[in-house]
Length: 480
Ligand SMILES: Nc1ncnc2c1ncn2[C@@H]1O[C@H](COS(=O)(=O)NC(=O)[C@@H](N)CS)[C@@H](O)[C@H]1O
Ligand SMILES: [Zn+2]
Image 1 (cartoon, rainbow, N blue to C red):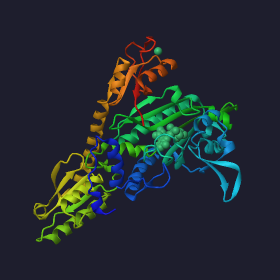
Image 2: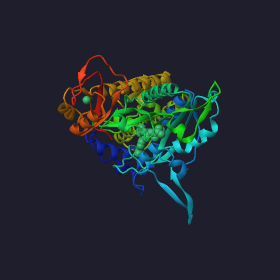
Image 3: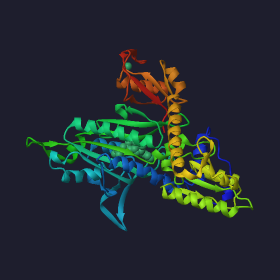
Image 4: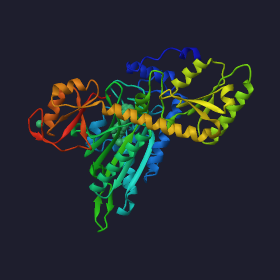
């Protein structure tokens, strides 16, 4: 795109939907013009954000005993159709390959919507004894879901391009339960690294993953008050083990069915990060995932231009050696246009260096998140820039955490819930009975999100539908 095209003003963030769509284009993250609904193109800049984000995900999974593998995309119909609940949940969403060239295939092949039915026939062959446990394998692949609801880039795609799915196997239901808790902890850590605070809850039974015993989920509160499900962890019991005959020899020599979990994160992780931290000038990226972490702007006058450019190059070399991703913008754009461009791309730190700064042996550091300016000595630029990154990350997280806490409203009446979910998430007592939950959803016109995993069960309240005493409150929210 020509530079001039991009000077068009970005909508204010209050108009979140327009702001979000324009930003994906103006910051060169995704091109939505691909001629298939629900499929989008990663621009190089967006792809670099994806790479940095998934490096964090890989680091946290690899450092917690997971191994990365890769399974085929195409799943034979007979395997896909084995687990009844799973089929019910996915049959309306799965794409089928029916031909090879002009020849019709004798067995239609599903494009994986998720990979249980590709992986578990292999697990059946791999798992032999309790000594093989825990199996903790994940893959990062594209998956395909024929979503009928409104598709949106990074949020609801038909080709989920960045689907990280982990599939674990254990000896007992309790071991699998412990793995679910570990996965929730790891997901919370991943989002901490993205400076994204999360709500953690157990989905109501009617909203759990097809074929699971239960589903725990992480949700972000988006700027428009709707929640985005940005990670899910499922306890699969021995449901799939029975379907796919995954058995192991127990210490007492018995053959037993295994217990399993699976958990997934997609590019929604990037949607949440962009949406929560961005502002009216564009992206605000946590330093760890920013493709460009520092942009150096030489302040050039006729006099002393060479010295300034030389100094900028020296600073770039030193920062690069320190492992920092840095650019110099020595283009002939006027300074204001440069600031506009790099602020749009969410570069966490701008360094301005002019002749006067050289005399004082300093650079002017400008933070993207707060706009705060500070002179920093060129002598220890590496350490000062790195500590700025930590300050920026911490400030982004604390700001987002306060924002989330201000958007959770404890309500006592259903009418109040209807009003509060326009701004964020409401909590309301619930006896836990299905009919009351569904009745509540009808009255409110929005779904029960889940029962908070950290629930303060310290007082008895009344279910607003049946009046039964309960210690449980439940999250209610409009969702993506
Ligand atoms: N159409 C979609 N576009 C983008 N992300 C999606 C889409 N559908 C689901 N996701 C994300 O993928 C995560 C995992 O999907 S899931 O259906 O809940 N769970 C599974 O598929 C399990 N096999 C665990 S990997 C969800 O929490 C959600 O964040
Ligand atoms: Zn009730």
